Image (cartoon, rainbow, N blue to C red; front, top):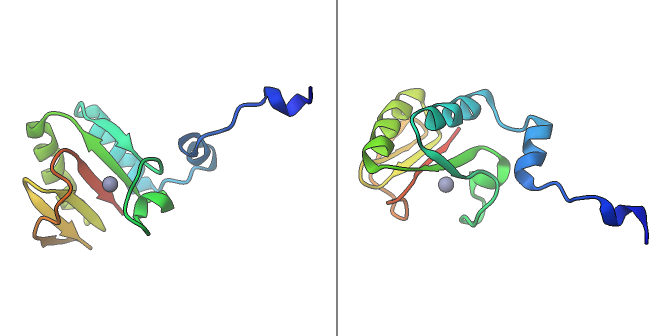
Length: 112
Ligand SMILES: [Zn+2]
């Protein structure tokens, strides 16, 4: 038996934490989501569209009560997000309001 068999693999989330990979705005957004009672459901993990900002450590998804997600969306809309998606409310792309893009009915997606 070799010693590396006893080592655990570090998952993408931990790796990002170790590397400090998330930017200040994204980190602040995640803290705000958690403070409001939302759950971070995806950062660099999960399945997303090809070239998703998730894979660059620039996005996260947050889920919880619809009324809380709506309030979180409204707050984050003021922060010039690169992407802010929540279908019941709409979307922001590069800080500008945009029609709902679809596929984001049960979580808020935020990216900088
Ligand atoms: Zn997302």
